Amino acid sequence: MSDLQCAATLHVARHGDAEYDVQGMITDEGGWLSELGREQVRALAERLAADPAVAVGAVYSSTLERAVESGELAASVLGLENTVVAGLQEYSVGDLVGRRYSDPDVAVVFEAWLDGDLDASFPGAEDGHQVLARVRAALEEIVDANRGRHVLVFSHGGVMSLVLPRLAQNVRDDYARKNFLPNAVPAVVRADADGWVVDSWPGTTDPRSV
Image (cartoon, rainbow, N blue to C red; front, side):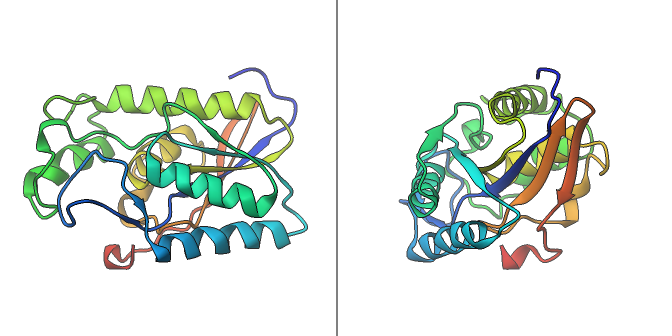
């Protein structure tokens, strides 16, 4: 990231509620927004558009369809275009695709990452270092293009929970452990020459509510 004179303010949101071909199973597929998800994203964009302190200058999304749909819908409300950025996508579960969410093996790797073991990986997928590096690079690219502006970014709960606290100076690396991210409610982070700061985090302590 280049030396910034003005902070870029990123409103980084998990995509809207999504549906998949097979519900209840771990998947790496992109999914698509449910009607609830579309309502969530539209409401987010309308709140930002109505906030006089926030003049969103750009919208970005990951490459996965549920995030792309979120970005396109929000951009249409804000009178902007969505830019798809490689690197913002959710982490892959590799060979665990097709297992149920309740499978204990599914949580092991992510919990290890939150504990600081970035060497851990799902079989056939990235380790935590690789996830952190590619998401950080994507966010820094966005920051460098938006000095002094507010931007809306649609990504995914897992990579947001892993990466954003690790970038920021003012929260613990495992800050998201008990602050689960709801759909379409952004974490607000600022980045300038002095580094990254989390200004607000929308997490809930109840995972059943996300």
